[in-house]
Amino acid sequence: MYNFVFYFIYRYTLKIDRSEKSARYTSSMVVGIALFMVFALLYGIARFILCNYYDISIAGKTVHLTLRAKIILISSFAIAVFFIWLYFNPRRISAIVEKYTGHENFYTAINIIKFLAIIFLPLLVGIYFENKSVGHC
Image 1: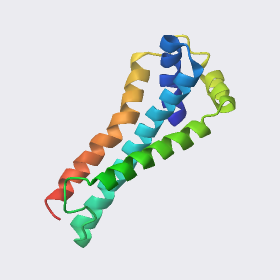
Image 2: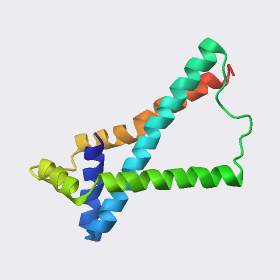
Image 3: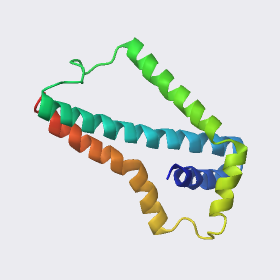
Image 4: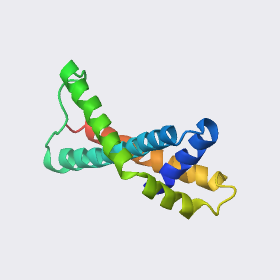
């Protein structure tokens, strides 16, 4: 699933930028964002279950993040993207490119919908569960 997301962005970035380093980095960041959406979904589900069934709140009381919390979050995301960038090494990229090379018209409506669903569907479902749990905790 994330190989598809990686290749989707990688091929488009190569077409525009023609730089493999830039395409690898951009694709790794998009995969990181997709993984963040899945973690947001898991957080929303966990918060919904804990609030509705056990009356346990795992959310903080304040809405505003402190400077320290912002630095920790940004650093965590940067480290995660770095490890994703290491995961998608040139050998793995060539294997992914070989897998999808046979598709001449890769950007079909179905593939675009699949890409958008992988990115945004976990976020939307996570927001739904998050909103359902807000009234109880």
